[in-house]
Amino acid sequence: QVQLVESGGGLVQVGGSLGLSCAASGSLFSVNAMAWYRQSPGKERELVASLSRGGSLYYADSVKGRFTISRDNAKNTMYLQMNSLEPEDTAMYYCAAGVGSYAGPYNYWGQGTQVTVAS
Image 1 (cartoon, rainbow, N blue to C red):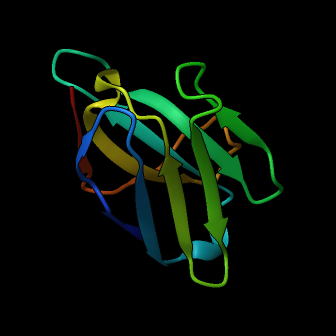
Image 2 (image 1 turned 30 degrees about the vertical axis):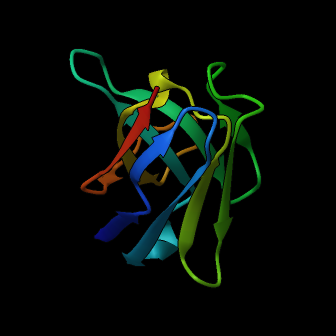
């Protein structure tokens, strides 16, 4: 089993920045890829960004150039730096981990952290 705990969400003004963290613990030897998903009310969960242990990266078109995903394997922590935030970025953000590729599927999920962008 893998446990994931997100932190860093909050309220930010349009154009501002926010950083999210995801601390992982447990049977991490099997984890190859980690990702950030988000979901806002009435919408499906969306893959925001992901990366694999080998360095493959994915960003949703809506966040390219604004968000940066990274991981610190020594700290078992993944990050999402979000810049130039827009009201459309308001959502619950979830950390995910999986044994497959950066494209998924993802087997483990955190509880989520809320990001609200105020206009």
